[in-house]
Length: 302
Image (cartoon, rainbow, N blue to C red; front, side, top):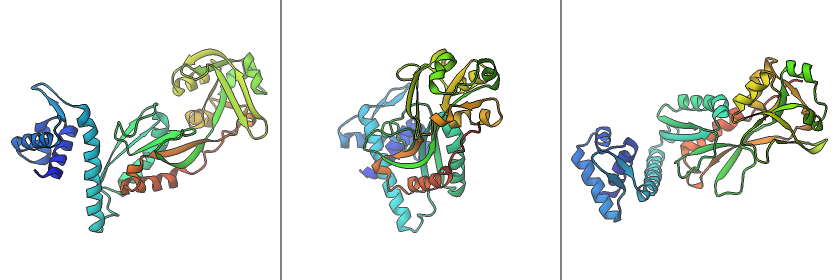
């Protein structure tokens, strides 16, 4: 048995979702695909795929082995490219994940430029507001906002964000502008349902130090888009990351408040596994992202 060939067949079957689809993709007879897959399972002494007449699914062993297969095949592909002097002409798939709105605004333009620069690369991007497991979901690079916990992953700092407290001009005219964080206890606020510790806002600045205030939540929502929209509608004061309210602040639908109490930067990192550290696609994207995303985000005008 050609084990590398069988690994390639298994990866193709797993990605395509069926033996027949993999056969079409590889340009081989279905019987060849089935035979190589069976030989690989006998060689490993385990079942990689549960197959019935209606469906096919990876077993737990198959899911783990698929990650190994892709890493081995990718390493060999990169080695061939380097030996052939084709390192500059990258190829293959790059997989990324980022918070939904941040990824749409800041990461997709970088990815579009990257794909234009390297026409033989394809990409898969997962825009979700949750922490994605890089190994479990086979992700090359993840964008993480905030301080990073200790982990076995590697990280590259690319930019900083800031929290911004803001409200609509109509609300501030009606209810007044808070002069200090403690004033927020007398204001209606738009908070987040999933905020740890309840509706407590913490302000940090070099001059004024740390200020914690439990605000009065008039409306609790589960997305930043909803918080910004509610603040624009005059429901109350909200507190979001600067990029989330950038356009509304720029066009005057929202006004920043308490800025001098909140000037601590929130880091943005690109996180990747050690196993992908020397992958040419990963290295090339990180280099471009650092160049494009390291420009400081302007503070909203008061």
